[in-house]
Image 1 (cartoon, rainbow, N blue to C red):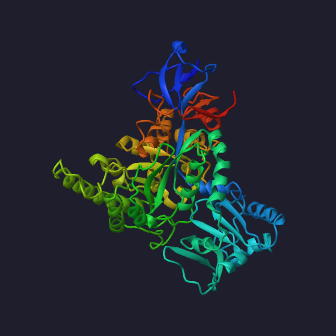
Image 2: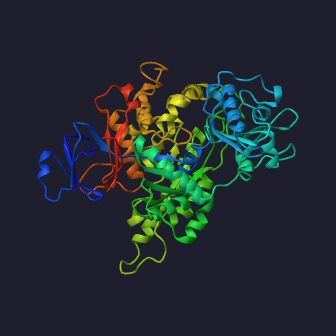
Image 3: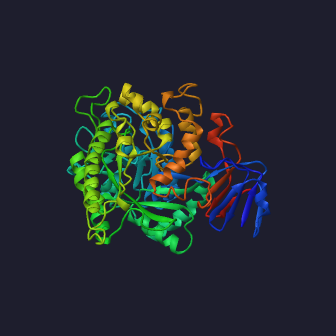
Length: 559
């Protein structure tokens, strides 16, 4: 038994008052209280925390774990200028054999201060780099760089050639190949067109991914993460299973299922919640639209300054969502649907509204069965409860849809750090509509459950950066002003922390054992160097966990 004492323990549990000591027996919390816990029998270790704050372990409720882990090995393309991005690519290529792929991630043309020449010149699109730029930076290597949004890619001529992309290549369904005035590909690939390059990239094995995740775990622990909700594909799942079998998985992972693999999941009998406390099945992940950066998010009205036809890309409307989602619901699988633009969110909400009726009908049918007869078919949800569907991102809502997530019991899975990165783009492309973007306070006020994450590697997975964004809605340099961007959407420290703890636990169906420091709960906790409840808001960004415990074990400790 371990006793941590002389601490400020914020348990985020309204049923238990704040404590100064906590007793941990094996993987669970035995008791909270004061220094009288030091009188318990069977104590094997005592730790004087010197008055330091303790909070529950934090969960990133939306991460791409494989992409993040592998991305640690790629060129960092999140630069202030196009020139700097190209310089980094050139530097990496100089140290590599000819014909070996140069891979990078993180470019955002909207943030480049040296925006290149006008549309058409050099075959480029406005504000973007071109294949020719990368050819000059890496003349002997194929190069492929994914955008910060993960909804666009940038390739050089060698990469396009290896992928078989030329002037005669048609745009794939749900995607677009960027072209110059003559129709020649210019190196920019949007949405599904990225798969054309993805199909020819060197593929890491599940073992290689496992090694990358194993190396990434200490970085995530150092940031304060003890759990994640992962939205990568089956190779990542295989890697996670391998890590778990070897006893090396020390993050709690909720694993999504891609929509295109739903039939296989149903055939295997997988259900949301299957697994254990370290690796369990989450929701079926679907995409309803693209992203703000490349203007592929689906909009009810056109982007600011664009023609009426330029409203992004809708991949899944309400009818299609119901058609695909009903198979999931009928087999006990919840949905997690990516929706950025206001049209995408509207369509998803319409689809889930129909699915809720379908779920209720299924539950009523099962309730009418003779109690002595075991139902022959799968239940739509556990013990007749409605499944916990989620919308991922919820970046822009029409005012008429603002209250619908709460009314339909849909979890708002949002990423506060997106608002800090995207505020200028949102103002530029959405205009006044941005007033209801990244609207955490609105969702909380209506009664929706919030689950916060980062969308890493789109953003940093550091949850304290997300906490700072949620509380201040301003950047580290103070922009756009002391009150922040649309300050009416700011949250309190407690509300934001709950979205990284109790909200994420609720989204995982694990609120009975995760997200709080309470007797019987799993002993996942952080010892911090700074108290988030008493420090200045601008200091939240720099909070550093000096101890991270998962299941009663210190996975890292600096004291």
